[in-house]
Amino acid sequence: MRSFREWITANGISEVECLVPDMNGVIRGKVWPAQKFLQSVHNGSLRMPSSIFNVTVTGEYADEPSEAASYSDPDVSLHPDPASLCVAPGFKTPTAFVFADAHHKNGDPYEIAPRHVLKKVLAYYEAMSWEVVVAPELEFYLTKVNTDPDLPLEPPAGRSGRAETAPQPYGLEAVTEYEDLIEDIYEQAEAASLHLDTMIHEAGTAQLEINFNHGEPIHLCDQVLVFKRIVRQVALKHGVYATFMAKPMEHQPGSAMHLHISARDRLTGQNLFGEGPDGLSETFRHFVGGLQRYLPECAPLFAPNINSFRRMRPGHAAPINLQWGYDNRSCGLRVPITDLPNTRIENRTPGADANPYLALAASLVCGYIGVRDRIAPAPMVEGNAYLHLRTLPRNLDEALDRFTECPEVIELLGESFVRAFLLIKADELNAYQGVISSWERDHLLLKV
Image 1: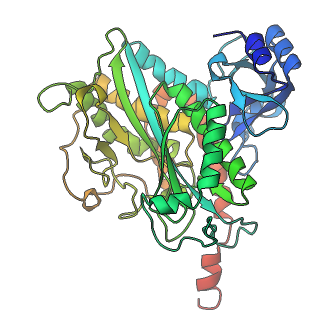
Image 2: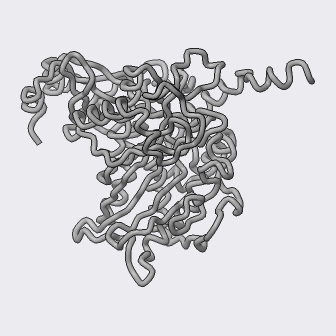
């Protein structure tokens, strides 16, 4: 790849946005004039406060009083990733995006940074000479502008001037209602070099889904965050909101981030999951066994918010367990029907609100333990997986408790990361529990 200077000059870039994903997948960072950015890269002076990795979704700091770093707030050095450099569409000033990794002053990676956590997990696969390949599917809703959080969200009017009032899964006329907005998304995504596949209308009113082409995990997670940013900005341009909440509306399906995961031998390129008379290798079965045993124990990594668990209810197009089956969307783990070179597992548990780096890290670390420990999966199911026992937590409180009691996953992800992550989620849970909801006022105010 060309140097930063060559790329910036060739693309006429005036400003560079350095993107640093926090624990919740919220993009934080700085904007530099292009020449100042190049100078700072050269002399190693790109820095940010380390406290950005302790920010809750409400914008507060989840500090640990006993730790001096919570108050001294030392800087981390930012190392921009040249492979992530792309044009930032939609800006009047020619601008570029680049993701940056956080490092200590001595050059070591900053252990709790989500991008590093995923890289750490991928290193376990590299040690086995595996190459992991992923393809996310991301769902989201368009809604009317909503400036009062006490009011429910509503679908926006389309080109016809009318809002949807009924489900329209895969409806072509329904999706063309938002054709102008969708074309803008595709144009900006192309400018940002995103590798998008198809967009469809999902089952919810004004709910869309985008499929990403398969590729390298870090790159795909970067693309998910850039795509979210583009969609939100394009939606505002068209006078509507776009939301990636897991369950934004009461009587509509939730929004997921399904993860298609496969692996191939780094030397031969052979798919390690597809083999044998039934097309599923023993390695693949062990990978699935690890997902079944450990994913329920680290649910906060793919269901990180209070709202995340409202999506995972029987019959609401989201799994409640880690059953697996061929082409069965009621299962948490779906095996798509395909040929041997494309054999993969689809993890249907993550919500669209999840931090993609952490949701994927959770999936891969659980699968790795399964392969390492040769964990046998439960038998495949046919029919309705909702009839089987629920194994996923019912709420964030339960999920956090279970995560703290999973030493196998904690050891591989890193204790410092897990401690920081749990501190943030505990603060968010505490903040939520102090809120009195409209449901309580509606049903309890004058009755109890």
